[in-house]
Length: 205
Image (cartoon, rainbow, N blue to C red; front, side):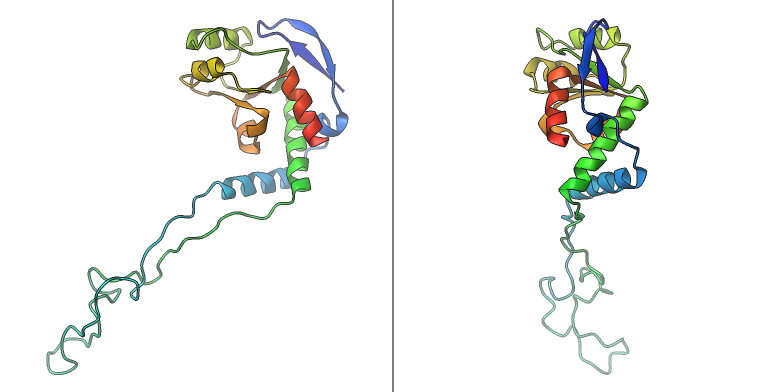
């Protein structure tokens, strides 16, 4: 298939031939769901931790004698029913990541990109950069492409573009090494430079 190449001023300058096996595959919703779930699960820290009654400091001495006080028997002040005691079902460090084969991940990314192309949410530009780290310049380029909710994907991240876009809500820029399913789905439009398209195609072919 062929992708239309535009300039950052919204002018058509030609077309680019891309592989149908990357940008024209069938939509696989269950696979995309599995890929996205695995990605989000892998991003979870899993650092929540609490102490059980055996891990709380203190409580080695019996607080009062077994009989004759009229109170319920107690062997330690670190019991979960006591203030300052341990937690009954204490949370522990855990790994939330889910196993996902590389072939499945790449197939899911191909399905996402293909669906973006079918829904006219994918824009290929010859280049996207600014001469200075100015938010105004980035806004002008986005306005010329009629974009207010977009992800910019470049082959090499420019410092000026990164600094200029970070104050714009619903807009972000990444390079091809940072591309992920959550970012592709989370924006209304995905703007990818011609060089980035070639890199992504080589990666997913």
